[in-house]
Image (tube, rainbow, N blue to C red; front, side, top):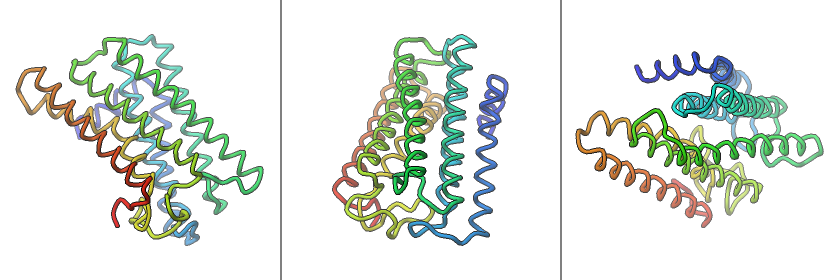
Amino acid sequence: MVYLKDVFRTVKKESPILYWIVIALFVFAIGTTLGSLVDDRTLMGVNVWIKPIKFSISTAIYILTVGFLITLYPFSKRKKNIINNIVSWTLFIEIVLIIFQASRGVQSHYNISNPFDGLIFAAMGILIAINVLIMVLFIIETIRLKLKTSKLLQWAIFLGWVIVFFGSWVGGQMISEMSHNIGVKDGGPGLPLVNWSTIAGDLRVAHFFGLHGLQIIPIFALLISNKWKTTPRNQIIIVTIFGLAYALSIGYTFYQAKQGIPFIG
């Protein structure tokens, strides 16, 4: 909890706009949660507000992570502001579009049923593509520069960026399929809240774990550095093993989904 307070405090100080967009997304999550309690409309078998809830929370966490990690890079103030504004505003608009489509009771993703909905889906694709380019920038800069942290955490951050890039690539695979599921149409039986299919392959599993590697691997490295008093070399080795195991598990869930096998049947 102390570390989380430090993250919020640092982000608020370094990028107030990004900070308040994060807060707005958490407010959206609360509002859409309330909406799910009073609005019983469903879309593809689940309440219309479930998707906005999930995306609001996940996106807020991602933007907050970027806002904090960028403080470790020796970028100019101007460069940091540009990146923070691009990431936070593009993803904020993405969530607004998802909420707007939910309010209409229609799909936000893979919806090309008419020109208007197709335009919204295309706009969302462009916004995400911009953020994928930012991920590539971070991967390159993490290799090229010396971050304001230990070698262990810099290595963990690099692994996190590579994995989140793969998670985004999985998202591209869903676009190519125009579906989350493999083997059945979207909207069948699924796990609570996440709605991952329990009867067929679901690419959202690999996508989800890939996108959150940017938090999981650096946090693991931080725990290792605080709890395991050994040489920096040994710490890097164990974080590398953890990162590879995490990446392989995501790769397996992707393979599993492509074979039409449910994550949990």
